Amino acid sequence: MLDYNRLMEKRNFVRDNVSKLDNIILDKYRENFSVDFTHNSTAIEGNTLTLLETKMLIEDNLSIGSKELREIYEVVNHNKAWNYVKGLIDDNKSLDEEVVKEIHSLLMDNIMVGGIYRTVEVMITGAKHIPPKSTDAYYELKDFYTSLNDGNYNDLDIAAYAHAEFVKIHPFVDGNGRTSRIIMNFQLLKNGFLPVSIKKEERLRYYEALDEYAINGNLDSFKEIVYELEDKELDFYIKAIGDSAK
Image 1 (spheres, helix red, strand yellow):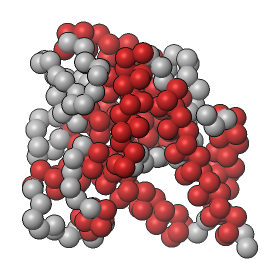
Image 2 (tube, rainbow, N blue to C red):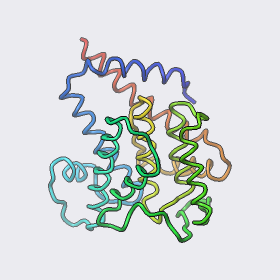
Image 3 (cartoon, rainbow, N blue to C red):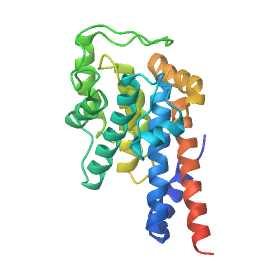
């Protein structure tokens, strides 16, 4: 696994030098990430819009023919939820139950009523882990929100933990994966890191790592994924900062 201290050094360098990038370029990087993140996060769940179609929908406000209305809403809603989180970060807000429920409500807009915990039992397709009963999930969620601030995880690991623990509990009937990936990035941004996008092509490794945590309590495999993705994002910005100085 990549060294945490080395990633902290890279994080600090980017944080201290990102202002050297032209604002137009910086905005374009962030827009590109938003499209990529929305595309991959929805595609992991089966959405069939391509990356280009996702861009056309959320950046150019162009309608996409031959797609189910639900798929259109999934993409539009994900982008709204992500913009909501970025606004919270700008306002120095923390992740709590109210925020999580609002994220889910935005993700489910025009699809189903969001922000309400399940009262039925659910299964995760393809996973070995069986989520807790709805009555047990309620208490696990209380512990989850407390654990976000108990200091047991470093500034990077808390993001991996937030995702893995939340999706293990699976508190909503639908939309848990998209919600968990957004709250993971909330924690990354909150701690000065860059948000990351898990590629749909990597979903098998991603699912196996989440299963490893849910069944055995071992977060290492998923942390490794988050570390690798964060390292790649940081290196991209470090190169851009270096190129801007030439």
